Image 1: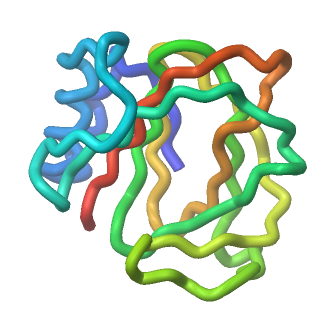
Image 2: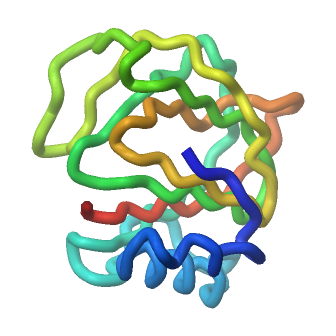
Amino acid sequence: MIVDRIDNASHYYGLGGRFERALRWLAETDLTMMEEGKHAIEGDELFALVQKYTPVAYETCSPEGHRIYADIHYMVKGEEAFGYARLDQCVAAGEYDPNMDIVFFKANCDLIRLSEGTFCIALPQDVHVARCIYKNAVPVTKAVIKVKL
């Protein structure tokens, strides 16, 4: 998993063209005015999910993983605890759903603070959990970019 500030996004352009376009889109788009929901960037190969919510207790969150897409979580407003665990140290809690490209896990994740202007990149080997309270439950606006691998 990669965690950094959007100001440093250019350091990760080498991950590939879709990652570069996704990070540029995040840096150049006013996400504060964007409506919730799915926003196409390049069809199903690169798209954004704009989300607005209030984080909840870590114990109620579900660690997840993906096989077809990488996630770029970008905090527009607010903060949350974001968790990470290595795939080889986790146990699947159900079957992989190929239609949603998701599998849930039982995992003890290490938590970081995802704050305004910060992004993280979760690859298929990265089990991750989002939407968790950091210290206080403050309203969040976040964009999750799905990058087809």
